[in-house]
Image (cartoon, rainbow over all chains, first blue to last red; front, side):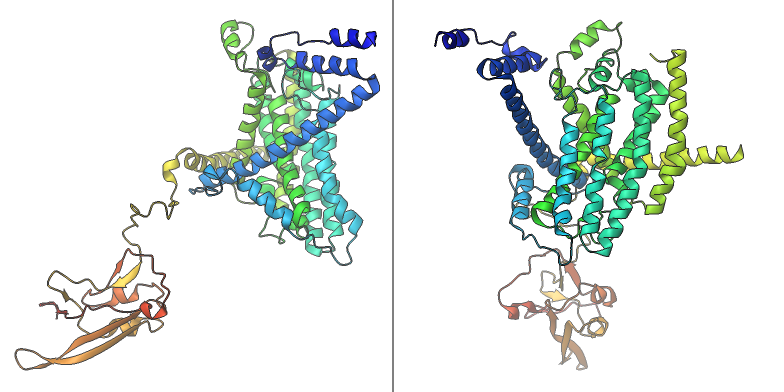
Length: 380
Length: 159
């Protein structure tokens, strides 16, 4: 009885004023952690923390998905000289919710002679792959769910699991057009992973570590895009192109375009399962955009120009890191949307030619150049 | 060596053309003035269609209720699906000669394809397109229109 009173009297408090938490989330997380430790055993604390992080990521996922679908439609519309959704809610902001509502009402049609276990499993695989990748991304100083020492490799490996979902969807639909679409998509994703991996390796050479928090910290005196000048710019461009191809987006969306092969691998899906594929595509785009923002543009690190511009750096520090991260990620997402609505679609043979004959050789040469630059010390 | 130069030239030329394309769509995105969607029906009061808009075929009459239609029937001949029907009558002019004049110029809005052949081929430029586009009615009989107004006659000097 007395020990309980003592426990409540010594409950931990937040060690910094609440408004400073915006700049560094670690006091907040330490406070939550020690409060939980006071109340329950370490095992249950871990379980509760994992549950909290899981729920937060789910919420984040849903909100980002909603926002990105709306943003895509508006950006697409403005680039095509028209208005986009503007009737449902002010400026059409409730359009995605209305669409989600409609998708939930749709009938889930079971396919005759289709492998129903795989058919139902496929959308979940793509969603789980993107969930696992979000967990490793640093959102702000102190808001990093899992900090692997092979962070970048983990994100690449886990987002590659999405291919399995696509192939399963195409195979289990019992539809030859879905199968062709899934095979094309599988070939495309697997080819472009090479380019994505090599351009990430270019930055890993510059940073010296695969751990995402180390990569972000190393950009505190300048983003890698500026530090590794020519080589990093080429790597950035190649990363942008390959990652739009990875996520089946943009001018590389032959596998799922409406006018080709009906709808490719997700033809036979309706209702919530189609919503999963749709959502997973937008979240994948968000994940590759945040990886691009983290390794090339500095993640949550404000724009600093080296140690000789201390006044400028101090001004840039006033903007909270989370805002920097969101701004950079949305800038890369805007670039990807710009690609999609400007360029005509590539045929499957043009796509594979681009990767194997153009991007891969340039990438290999670029890795050599970056290694040379790092060894000679010619970077900033 | 030649092939490497060609390869690099191809890449640079390709990237340059892609950037030109992105400039066009980028300029459309950052300039909301280029949007051509009209927020109808909330802008009904001040909505002005463009000059060449094909709303409905009309026969312009001047202040003295005169038109330029001579009843020649060329518009009826040229109309691809028989939307126009010319009913003419014979009148006696002041000199005592018999002349053909238009009695009724029937125009069926429900069948019109808005191809503008009648307007183009009329030798006296009697027909024109108006800017009115709200044609929905509840009674189909209202879509059969007579283009020459009652009591109107041919303008002097047309024929």
